Image (cartoon, rainbow, N blue to C red; front, side, top):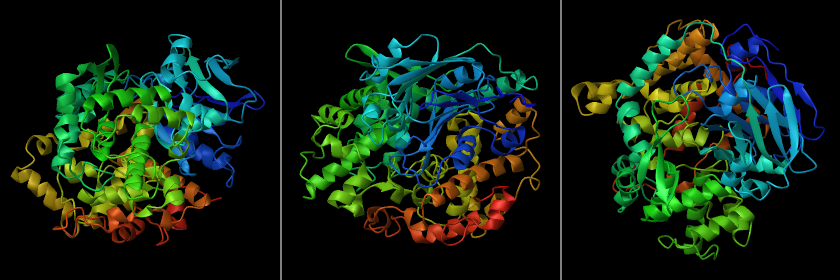
Length: 633
């Protein structure tokens, strides 16, 4: 189905693994205007096509791999793709985002998205060369790790693969592309269930923007290189550079989130990584930020760990050896697992063992055999078979729900929310579960840059909603979330204690600020017909596609996507009770001298629901859905 808009390939490919039938899924220009692409496009497709009561491990479950309109147009940091499905970890709609070049290759093959349904009777990998789709026997690839299998597949192509963890249906198995990972939510296990080892794609079709966009992209790249975060901090230390800041701000998860600071944080920090192990920076195609790390391990050049892995395989299990983290990160990637959920599950198992709930041999600070444990998880051997199910399953079987660190079944990332209560709210209400990005990443303003009071509830719900909506739509463009650091004026980074920075802090948290933010949140497409220079994606969409985009429309697309995901999950049985955190985070103060150092979740949720246009049960009101042009069915 062709399109009048630039930036799009114009087709959505549908593959049925059961019948091996190939079709084109209808996707209109009206759909593009309302849902844009990426995770929002995927949410709409799954909402319309996935039966309500099926299990994630079902032939009727669909894997939706989607790109955005900026992918392949040369936009900086915009080569990302999204992969969505019913999650085996949460039972809910989940999306996972990935860098690398698969999204670019998919669009050059002529497709904005790839939908995969059914279940193959035999192990298979799919090769897509423009209109030619071939199913190959994957017996020779089955059992190979994510590095081996990619080396065995055709060169100069985009690839997504699973490792042994996906084959053995580990609930947090990821999907891997080059050295990049769509790690969260367990979609690698859905591929494994469908007997799908890999998808390979290539093509030579042009992706044509509607207008000459190169001068704008050049300016955008210059701005990213000038910004203190995207031009200095991330290239210098990557996300690993946040370890030290988080520890100082008491948001570094330590000992299964019992504490927010780790005494040996310097030994697992980004500075330590850069000093002793870094070979060079690496980055995704078209990305000027280059936040990735290449490190040396056993004489090999391998991908280095991100912040989440350093924190959760370091402080959260009381491991002070960065060398072990490098090794475990590499091994988990090869096996095909999400490092966040794997590490969070290990930490919970350690505390279960410590408290006598489950004798499993795992102990904080004693981490010599975790390589064997991770292998056991991937192949479901011994205690690995239990650990492969995740924290929620373990808490239901063995107890310890009060310190089971998850939300909606997904393990939390490395930010300890009692030191940033708005982040705690975000974890609880995030559609895919305990995710720092789907949450709105409010910790950025509470602890990492502009340090608004981390313990106040004032403005947190409203600001969190705004950030969630913006993150949602930026992801749908195909852009990296890191491009949104441009929202933070440079002076707030360079001079955080200046009078101007303090004034901004006061403005955001003064008594009426939440109401003002909510006016913006609750206004719709025609009400704010302006562009905001700090969000370069708005003009980029207009130039690339030819759509008449403005801040009001841009924000509405994000809000539409977030609400669509919400009603999908409500249809799956989600209630307000699922917008939860364990008692450790809501009832136990992190600091006994500071009673505010806990997440006042009930108060925050009430403010959030009202500001979202939902009822007090967390269900979007009909008026809200109508204003967003979402039909409930």
